[in-house]
Structures are given as structure tokens and as C-alpha cells.
Length: 238
Image (cartoon, rainbow, N blue to C red):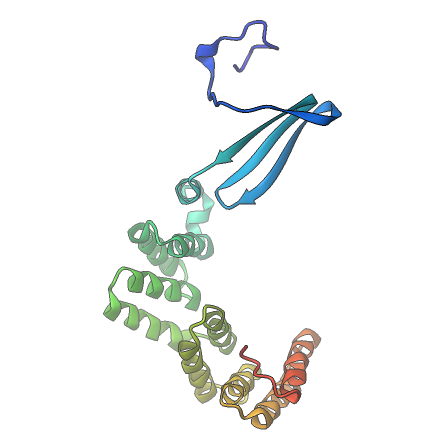
């Protein structure tokens, strides 16, 4: 009840929600009202209301995709609809949940119209594939690869490896080597290809070559960790 104070003017017909609970007794006194949140999950949480010697547990659950998509649609009514990234992120979320794919494809197209990028083209290709439109997906993905920078190709291949799609990742590494062999990411791609084949000495040479042309200290330090692993004859793809 929005305007009532305490329980003196309580009216059950104005309840927004009513649930059955099983209170339990606390061992220690709680002087102030406390809400404890436990067992956090993507779509639910266990809440316990504690006050004095009483604890009242209950669970709050939501339909995560339905709730998030409703929020996304609301956000895309504002300034977010005029930037490529929020639209692309919205489409990616739905893709990850395998829901609302047709509308997500429209968001991806809108993102591309604002600014054509590797990221939103790749999202569109994945959406088309999920919608069983393989020929269209290949055409869009090929175009995405054409405009991708070395770091985008390398990062995408690494994402595929994280998804256990090693064969696809290796194909992208090979494309990167053919296109930009002397860049940091060209050398790193070659190192990963040779490492996967068990050629640790060759991979080590490529990693050192990558470190030699790296610009930032952070990048050089990251490559050093790969060099250390290769010196220990470890496959850097695992």
C-alpha cells in the first residue's frame, strides 16, 4: 500500500503480491531489519528477512530473457537506437539465449546501417546461421572477414577457441597469416598454428617475432607468457 503507515490501515485487497512462507527462529537477536541474499543464480535469488528472533526465507525468480529483452526494447527507444554498439549488443544477447532472433536480425541490420563494422556483420552472420539461412550467413561472414583488421581476426579466432571451435579458429589464423604475416597478430597466429601442430621451436620463433614488433608493454608482457609456455613445450592453444 503506497500511502499507509504500519499495519493500522492495512487492506488485503491492495496487496501487490502474497506468498506463503515458513518462518524459522534465529539463534541470535537481530536488532535491525536485515535482508540476506544467497544462492545467486541468473534467474533467481534466495532472500531471507531477519528481524529480532525471526527469519523469513523466500525465493525471488524472474524470466531472465523475457525481462532483459523488455528492458532492451525500452532502452532502444532512446539514444541507444542511434549508435551501432547498443543495437549490436542487443542482438548478441538474444543470439546467446537463442530467442527473439528475427527481431535481433533487424537490430543487427540497423546497427550495420549506422556503421558497418566487423562486429555487427559477424553478429548478423551468426543470426542468419541460427535461422538456418546458411547461404546468406556465408556471404555476410565473408564480407566481415574482408573488412576485419588483424586484431579483430585474431580476437575472433581466440573467441572461437574458447567456444571449442578449434577448426574454425585455425582457418581464421591461416587467413590472418596470409593477409598480414609481419604484424604482431600475424606472427601470433602463425605461432598458434605451429603450436597446434607440435612445432614448438617454430612457434617460439614466431612468438619472439611478435614480441619484437609489439608496441605496448602490456602486449609484450602478454606475449612473454606465451614464450614461456612454448619454451616448456606447451601448446599455447590449450
